[in-house]
Length: 110
Image (cartoon, rainbow, N blue to C red; front, side):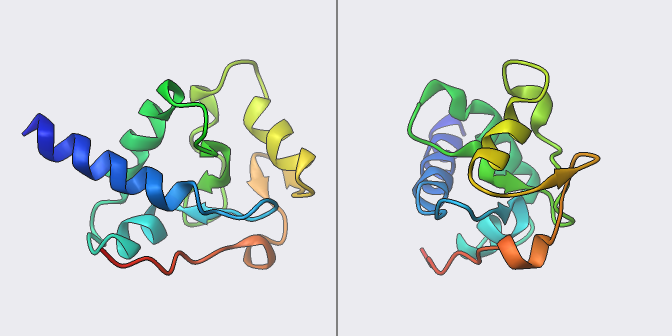
């Protein structure tokens, strides 16, 4: 089972690495792109574990409403928000302003 999880996590990371600068996507959108539409929570677990690799822009993955639900997994109080704001994405009350404008839909199908 661990090998299956590792493989899924790696596939999540392939998608996450493609999120453009200044854009965000959701856990569910990544799951759908992987052909596992009901696995948004598993994508979240993969993002939580992504700190072991420094080339994954986990700060660009939010929930389906644009809320920074993973922010407590980042070092510092507001690091996730700061990273997003440094890319020109405005955040208010832990939610992305103009979420639809910044949303990126993964095109990858495995």
